Length: 488
Picture: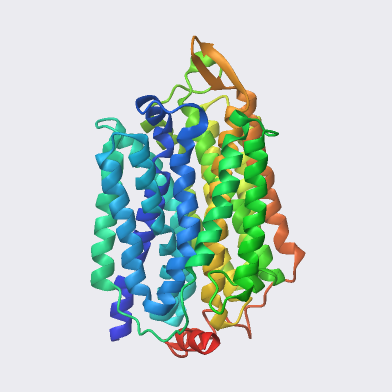
């Protein structure tokens, strides 16, 4: 066995575990949001910010750390990203107050950069024939870890306090941290240029203003001065961000890339799938834990709720190799279309049938298959659509937009639920069943749109283009060398 083959055998497990750790931590709070709201005495939909703040942090830090990976090396930035997940877990384990948990979730958002950094490492380090499968597995690990997090959280909550959920994430992140230090090789730094902290600040500004307006619109009133003012601030800051990114020499996000039809389509699908997945996790977890006496829901424990959603992880895991095989055979369009279709089918089912636990079990499994196929297809779709020197930037942008979709999805679904409440006991209000139905149908429609958008442009051809199989491994350092030439 060659030295490269022996090294690659350890690299992929370390990277997969890193992505799993982040995605598990990201969704582990979803089943315990009702518990946290009660224990921490958080009013209204404010508790959903433990999910939204993490996604927002990931959306801002992902392109910044990915860019720093080009400038300072991918392994150091991987270490930083995983360290953030570890520190966030420790802070959450200390717990005790909502502000501290919010800080913990923001710090853990650094893990969002793990995915594009891991994809870049796979493309550089794995043998040519292993790249498509490796990228598909790493991408699908987002969905796998999300489903595992729901079950693991339930198991922990059966015997321990909510702080133990955060310690669980910290332990997994510590293992991933050690494996990356040990198994991922140091990469030579060849890119030139600078980071773009001002671009990151503007990105954080418009995203924060938009998400706060969405999450608080019901409480403040959609026509209130505060809500409209935040929407206006988001729009102004967005315009300023685009103007800055188009003019700086080393932008945080390459805006011109967004205008390319194939990239725009893939990123649109990423936003929609991210919205549907994270938004539906919030809906399903709350729905299954709602007491039966309300007239809907199953009164499930956190663990039982997690098991109902666990098929989403199984579906994502099963879909990863299928997606890789479909990509090798006919290109990435079909798995991307099927991914949106399966996600829409699963969520649409819950919009019409949610009276029995098995409805949630089947729907989450079908949705998981869709998420796994879509997440496996997106990097391959992008790599087949851009020159090799732009593939790192393009994949990083796609990861950002998936996260943005998840952040918006969490905020919107929280607004949908709090917008239609009914009093079930003195001083106790819960969402109506219609609110859940509307939420599931919104997510299903967005999944269906994600299945349609790939047909808006010509399908990328896998032969004669810049794909992992054809160009990435002629020279292991070619992507970095070409990126450096582009930035010089």
